[in-house]
Amino acid sequence: MIDWLPRRANGPYRALFRTCLAESMTYRTTNLIWVVQGVLPPLFAIVAWLAIYGGRETVGGFTRGEMITYYLVIAFAWYVIGGRINFQIARAIKDGSLAHQLLKPYAALAPQVLGEQCWKLINLVLALPLYLVLVIYFRHDLHLALSAPRVALAAISTLAGAAIFIELEIILGVVAFWTTNTGNLFEIYDLLLILASGELVPLSLFPNWLLGPLNLLPFRYTFSFPVEVFLGKLDPGQTALGLLGQGGWLVGLGALARVLWARGLRRYSAVGM
Image (cartoon, rainbow, N blue to C red; front, side):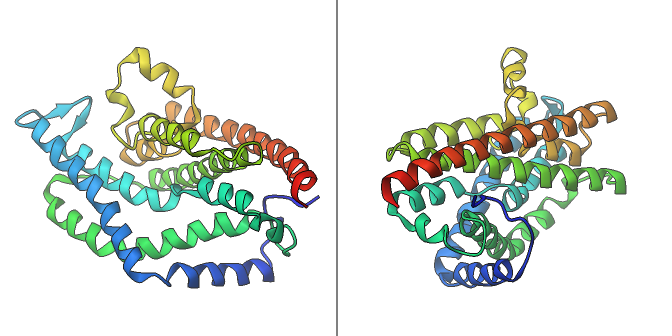
């Protein structure tokens, strides 16, 4: 059976990576527009929070410097964790291009997953000068006491968050096997993601009655948890528990994605192939 994840990195995947990288560099003007659009939200968020702080030292347990760092790190982390893979998967199912991908010598969804990573890589390179300007401008507010163990844990949790994000995107994308109207579902998902992942505001600012249910969802483990680890907002016990939570969601969402993919593929083959 054709799987949706690669079994090993080999020639076809290297060739696909080069192709995706070349395609990502084709539309330079579009990439520059996306870079500006990516930098503006964290910048506006920082400006808004600075107005909220006024003369106060902390808000919701975050100092002024920690809040600025939070949004800068979230913005940077998006290029590792984020993306819009679900739309690409749904489009491939709807327009029939998935049928051609099933015949290729690599995993069927590799063009969507790997293509998004290449696009983010190109845009990250283009965005780095702008983020460097922000870091220099706010340098007096950034006070991070980083240690090698914390950086290592943050890197591990970031990669796990990226994997969880990809699994969520695949699960949403393959819904297109059963319905052609995925737009509303994706909009609800995007809204829930930005609220529950900590992209909009740190989750610690939510009231306890809402924070409890949000912590039961997988979204916190995509963005919020890795940033919390990086900023040192968690003690060792909370970090260990969070890493276990990431592992549990990786296994559970991965199993669900495989089941939906297998069933959807049977339906797809029966209808159009």
